[in-house]
Amino acid sequence: MFRTGPPILTAIMLRKFCSAVILLWLAFGLVACGGFLPKSSDNRHNQPLPSATVSGLRAMGSTPGEAMVVRIFKQEKTLEVWKKTSAGQYKMFKTYEICAFSGVLGPKVKEGDRQSPEGFYTITPGLMNPKSSYYLAFNTGFPNKFDRVHGRTGSDLMVHGDCSSRGCYAMTDDGIAEIYALARETFKGGNKSFQLQIFPFKMTAANLAKEASNQHLSFWKDIKEGYDLFELTKAPPAWDVCEKQYIFNASGTGALDPMGPCPATAQAPGMAEKLAAEEQAFTKAVESEADRVARLAREEAALKERTAAISGVIGSIGNMFGAGGKDADVVPVITGKPAPVPMPRLAR
Image (cartoon, rainbow, N blue to C red):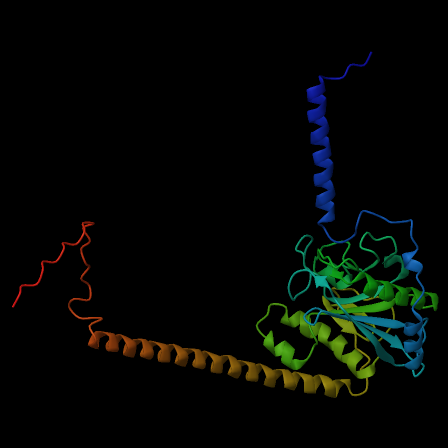
């Protein structure tokens, strides 16, 4: 007959086992936003697009099945959905507020750093998560080719609902429901993927100049070229990686060696002029930012001088009225005894 241990020991062992399971669950749960509570009893991932959304797409010359691009801006906490129109170019359809993202400006580097990724990603149907415990979600595809060649690590970096983030971009449930449905309809329209572009902020020369001393500046200037191409052509640039950096609209076919030499690029009309103008604007903006910082430093120093001068004048006035002088440091003696009753005045 199989014998169990004493009841007390069995209870202790059970508690230890349960604690270990909980700790393991938390360890995996803190990695990112993958979720462990699938909800298979609902049909939220198949919610139809609202009629107002379909009408809005039609009004801009698009349809739910047309191609799309998603852009994320950390500092502005916005997610943009762009849709391809009958004219062939993309127009911004709608902007959604990002409820929360993790970390600070800058790319994700390693598992557990609680940073949200930045860069260019390709979203396929396999990255959609209809049973996310965060309402609905799609995986960013991090780490991509660029991230891997730089040794960056991380997993389950999502765009999801529930307004809670551990390295992800969290939307409201209503927001992710519409974004998810737009992506679903894009795939149903025959598009094999859509492009996700993630930036620290709107990639203007002025914004970059404010971060001129940031360690990520070279990376940001690298992805800025893709940002500028989209702004100029209103079409998502083809991206790849070579020489450990992003390259956009590379000539030729086939995947590039991420550490190999970069080929020539197919320059869009007007792009060379735009890049030159942007670089010139960046240089001027850096100079203006340096002037602004120097001016603020001078104003701060002047304020300190004025404060010191005013303090000196107040001290001098105090001395004039006895606040200073030889008796300024005299401390009265307190004995704790009651003061003597004064004698009556003598009659005159």
